[in-house]
Length: 402
Image 1 (spheres, rainbow, N blue to C red):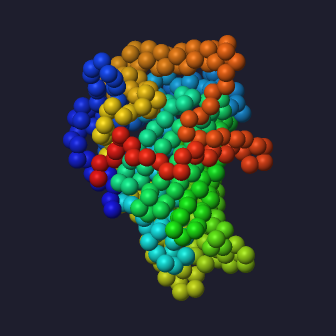
Image 2: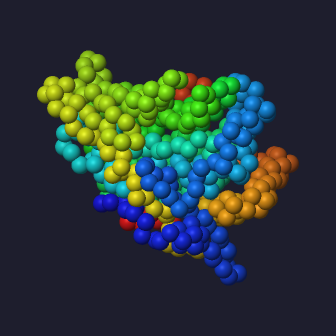
Image 3: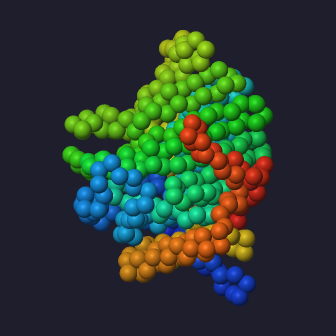
């Protein structure tokens, strides 16, 4: 099954990104912008007008080593979507069905390679100088892509923690992720370690794959750049296999060969024997080499997976929750897309002030906010843990066109 092939909704703003309901029963304005893709232009200009202005703002207002989770970007430097939407897109916005491939082989080695390839597909392009909105507490994002139903909720605001649950009943696949970015300003760069456990469960195989995420890096010198760096480990206790991946960016001296490169290996957990070597570029081609036979195989082609992606569409406007990201931020997104910066600033301020008001109300009543869709816990050793309350995610009123 293919998901999201090409732009079949046209290029007009009213068809791709803007939906409005009228009537007394319910009124919803929904802005759904296209996801970032690899190697192609989009109808939305995601570039910051003057990235150096953002750099100067950080130097003026933030001390090196500071936590940036409370730093607010002006709308000029925002993408027309929430971080919650971007998080969800990494799972449901693909041009080929990577998850089904994880289940398809009877060979555990082939399944593990497919899981590694799927993990690479969740890494998406970054644009220096622009960032999505910080999600509000209780914000949700509920989207279906084929048989895959995805639900996200912002379960904490300070610190920012997002939870994701996705199920595909036909493939017997389940995803449970906890996403906690921790950005820090280091003087010449911003490094955002993405904490939280990610689990991919192949239920009919009885296998659980546990993995982490690479680190987001925004570098100012010698030239502005945004990329993913760091190490990712993927483990499956049931098969006894592990993978280590290293994401690398251009070095300080701008050696182009390292740009968006990825190297790694797949090995046996018990003996540490290397079975496969992984090499390539996550935004192009990644190959795997069978150590025993010396055979090279393309395991991931970013152009096939991350190009021709469409924005989701609304199937049933009456079923869209008021907490949906595309509803919460609709007026701000519309201001950004139309480049009406005064309107965008007003709408962003309105959303933020409403949240402060709700916080004051809870504090005055001695109430504690509780997530609707996840149970959340935290411990110093294991960090944040987000467990879905429901066993399965229901079909969503927002859908990725096939």
